[in-house]
Image (tube, rainbow, N blue to C red; front, side, top):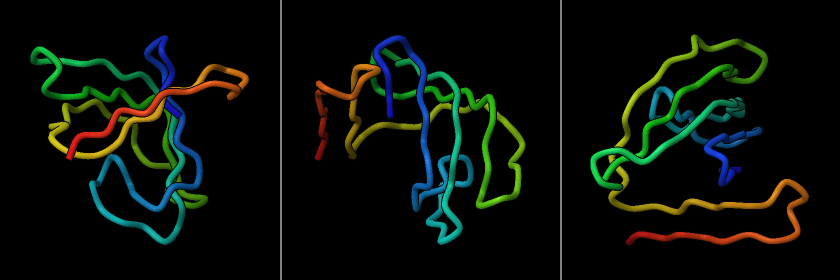
Length: 86
């Protein structure tokens, strides 16, 4: 879940955002995000992350956002918006 306030949570997802690989162990993380390079990249700062039950070292990195989907939801998850680049 990417929030408008610049925070995010990923819970039990099948893609490890830090290692940039698929994972069957379920990846969970929380941190902050922001757009950089005039919106061409998304910068993730991980405060906590786990691969299954194993902690992953928090890190920051810029990730090119040339394709994919970002979902934004309000805290109650009653409304949301989706951005998709293909």
